[in-house]
Image (cartoon, rainbow, N blue to C red; front, side, top):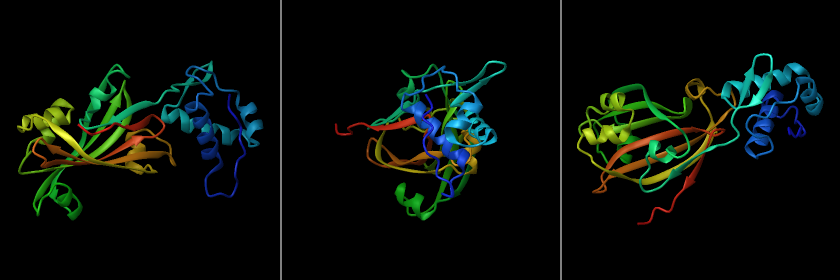
Length: 247
């Protein structure tokens, strides 16, 4: 059941966004299960003490994000109350991690370019200077977008990483094509922020949505950095769990 908590006006956060956040919170907390029909607009407007237009804006945002689904002539329903769990450990592989939670995963190359390494990227990849290949990717689970990522690789070491990723949809296979048979997660830093315009578009989120950002360094079996990546997770759809990385 939608709780209808108190709305803070003049807080800097739009009222419709506060309502959307509260409905989403009720869903993720298990108070509304998958398939449950949403109460009528007039009832929600009464609970939150707002007009129906504000309720429509909140419902439209949640529908766009995939939290709710609208069925012609029947109403609006909770689309999915279950978050996917992304476990970060010594070996972090997207498709393997989600294999038991979804039917299908897919990696899509959005863009790529060769560029000069910034000081941040050069330090992460243990490069003095030189060119890197940047790839921007999107991952889907059962057709729903769940993560966007930007990754950098030493261009001299993996010159064809973009083409190999495009054909395979997998960083693991792209690295194998460059002769890197296995790799480990060296470090991960997790933060949260509002989704930017690109993430809103690719992850199909509404303005004001939150993404979890995992900044990571992967190394080969000799400890040499091979990938520096920043992955954005749709916070409404995924949660991150940290596994014990000791051997």
